[in-house]
Image 1 (tube, helix red, strand yellow):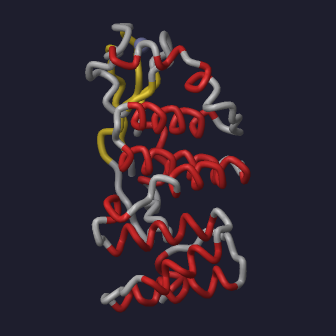
Image 2 (cartoon, protein in one colour):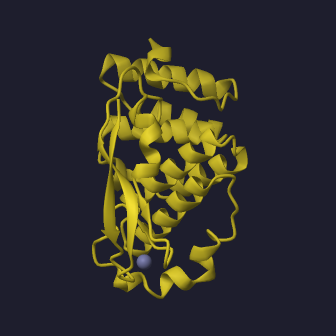
Length: 209
Ligand SMILES: [Zn+2]
């Protein structure tokens, strides 16, 4: 089970103090999704992964750290409107804003994760257009430096491509990457087959076995 605690938080941007709930502990049993989204209970703890200041609207996972350098940016139309995109869920919007903050802070790898988390929140809200948009934003940040020859991250990227409907790119990445691990080979073959069938569905690692 997941355990929570009430905490007082001081915004690192405007100094406002507010009550929030923080995650004390959680667990994950079973198979992750192919994009490494964890199973329950951790799966349902996403609202605890970031904090939102109710006074200034700053969003961050470490919101108490100094955020003054973003004071002007969080007032921009880009930030306030999620670059003009509307989402079905507030959680998607908040993860998207967090990704924008991370981009502003020159942290593209962390922004990649935040856009993916925004996509997961869209998936949960049945916001199909939002989910594709957020995956496309993450995909645009994917590069060799991000993957660092880590086959897990390459497999995750293949899943993003497929679920965003970029089937030929997903197949090309499956074919151009050598996966030495047997399970990884199976996942890559599974991804290739799904892509050939134009399947954008959500699958778990255990579905490949
Ligand atoms: Zn604030």
